[in-house]
Every structure is written in C-alpha cells, then in structure tokens.
Image (cartoon, one colour):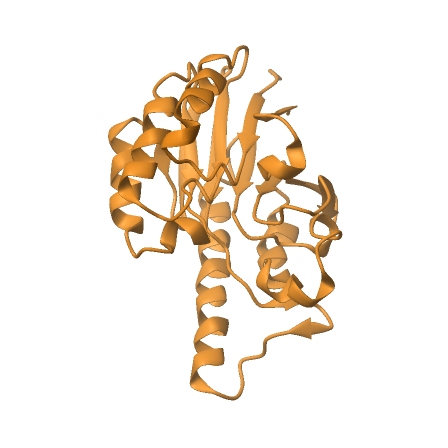
Length: 236
C-alpha cells in the first residue's frame, strides 16, 4: 500500500504580523499529500486574521483541512472565519468528515473541535448546575460527532482524526495539572479506541508532550509551540 505524508500543526494564532512567515511556511511545504490544521488558527477570532491564514493556505500544493479552536470562537465569528477559509479552498470540519483521493488511496478525515471536561479521576459529570451540565452536553455532542464520522470513513485505507482539544492526558503532561480539565476530555477517547483510526492529531496544550496513545492509536500534539517548527510531518 502507498504511503501518505501528512503535514500538521495547530495553534498558529494568525495575525497580520505573521503574514509573511505563514506564507513562506505553506509555500515551502514539499512532498506532502495533505495539510491538517488543528485549531486556534487565529489570535482573537477575527475575520481579518482568518484572511491572513487563508492567503497562506492558498500557497500550499496539497489539500488543506482544518478544525477551529477556542481562539477562533472567541469573538463569535466562527462561521465567518470558516467561510473565509473555505473560499481559499480549505476544508473546514466542524464535527464532520471528508474523504479525499490521495496517494492512490481513499483518505478519510474526521474533524471536530472537541471540548473540555477533564480525564478519568477528575471529570465534569452530568449532574448539578445547569451550566455545568451544558458543558457536559457539548462534550457529548463532540463525542457523538467523532463516532458518526469514524463510522462513515470505516472503509477508507487511511483514517485520521483531527481535533483541537486533547483526548488523552498523555499529550498534556507538562501543563499545570490544575488546568487539565480545560485542555480536553477523556470522553473523546471512547470512539477513537473503538474504531482505531491510523492517527489522532490535536493542539491546544502549548506545554504538553508531543505524543501519546489511546490503546494502540498514536496521538500527536501538534501545537506549534510543541512541534517547535512550522509543521510536523508524519508518514502513514
């Protein structure tokens, strides 16, 4: 079977001051089949910031798919941000999936923001005040989206999951333990463990570890601050 080369990064926090660097970074990508962006694409969730990244993405020679992160939701303009990126050819996944013909095979990508809630031993429960139960419910929707997407791409030769929030503590160790509940949710791991995609990529945890696992599934924290370069390139 052919190999698939994927370039991934998250937490770019694009703004006008980063324009030239981003355009050079995307233009310099060679010998990759797919580019994945793991959320926090903008600094303050503004449309002009999304335009900076959209312009850079147009320089990529490979298809680009992305999920949004908490920064991209900050100003309530997430729909507009998604539209700007999509006009530049970026596939924006918000709990959905896409199947691409790459490197002579079908490649399925499931993408979702994910959400907070903590990890086994310290998790938000579906109990108590309405606002906390709404947090639980939002995470449930993200988990359901992953399940549905992974079912839809089950027949693909390569199956990838793209998130912003972390689905395992493996890749957030290094962050203060007191904020782990805000960095992701262990509930996101259930559909991943059940369907066993080829890889999971996420961002958000700037001081976390670069890699971990969910069962036998490799998980990479591709936050730019962790990767230490413009992109992490992996071969599947």
